Image (cartoon, rainbow, N blue to C red; front, side, top):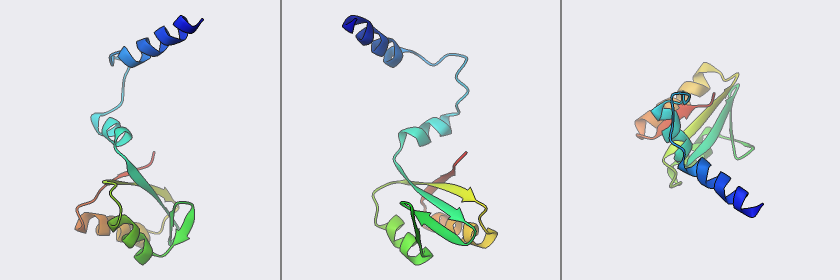
Length: 99
């Protein structure tokens, strides 16, 4: 029984991507890279399950070693969303959108 488990793990880790893999290179890069998650809900920013001010969010982002931000749009106002993406662009911080 134990050898079956071990061979299953090997076959999964050793498998190559085939024609059934429809992930883009960018999606795979995002999955492999560490990132912080920010949700923009209406005019509020949610980080680590807490609502925080934009100023505090900027400090959190600038003081982290994480290189990307994953943005979730939860009925965000255009102004709040643009404020975040403009800040990230101005500071050359990569971001991507939650699906």
